[in-house]
Amino acid sequence: MFLVDVATNTSSITAAEFAQRVADAVVVLINSVSGIIVPIATLSLLVSVVLLIVGSFTQSSKIKKAGASGIGATVLGLIVYYAAPTIISLF
Image (cartoon, rainbow, N blue to C red; front, side, top):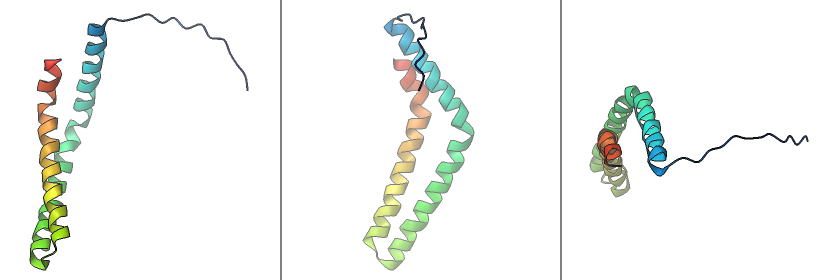
């Protein structure tokens, strides 16, 4: 194991600059996953609705809960995804 003494040139940044860098990183993340979020949410919603219907036919409360939870999680995820630019602009 080799220990190398590397001189690092670090500088402190202001809170505003830090917030801007974090906001920029979130925007880049949103832009990079924007093409895949809606298809995944659509597939998840479809599977959840099928689970809800199957649970209703079989009268299984666990399957119905899984379907309802999937629908809720999908809707909440899409709301957060579409509201992310507004949330970022608040900071």
